[in-house]
Length: 308
Image 1 (cartoon, rainbow, N blue to C red):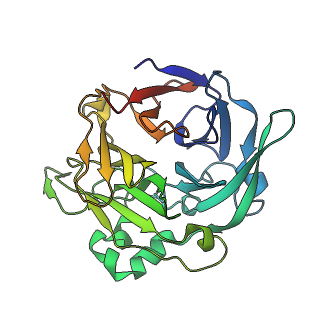
Image 2 (image 1 turned 90 degrees about the vertical axis):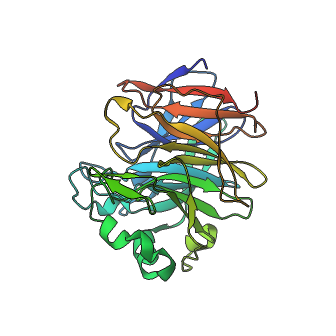
């Protein structure tokens, strides 16, 4: 791996490709999206301000950030999801309960801009709590627990499917497992299939598939991206703070017709703090990993080959 550094977005979280050279990135500390040309290090001006596209529904300022964590594209509609978490102290943050979409255009001089697609969906967790299939995950309790605490709530992954559904990946809570010394061991990662995202944002009720539990070695989902056919690339990491990064992130390939993700053993991620992953169109053997490694002025992108 030979990471390339980019500047103009500090706390990178979700990201998705726009075309063969451009990708759009969210910063979990503000409500702005930045478009990057993979061949150049600086964000392309202007950044896309979500408070302008969703005037009166998204606001800027302290405590108003959506805490964007995941991104996925269905055709030319780009979906974004907030963490749905409390702050680190367990205080409720309604602004983070957001799933929304926009379309991105490029004008004659090469500037990118956004246009909202439909409505903002705010009641994901409420709807899951009312669905008996999700009762075992105790989301009614998790919604009030700090995101990196045992039993807390944090959404970090979002992927589109060939059927135009979305897969919502949870970093926390995990399913099952055994509590030991205040932490959870051997829990399984939770994925929620959202079957009608396009219609959902046009005022239809949410439709969910059955919950999916995956054994990622006790880790939760940090991001997930569709690769090809029924296969997805999953970035897995600990649900907790992981001080000093003692636990390495891992990559898994998952055939969604099974419940057995396979670890990608030939790639050593070392202490990379991966916050987002995506594939450029047609590059199914080359995955892009975006890392937030404490650099105050930017982030890194590493391209790794999935096939030896």
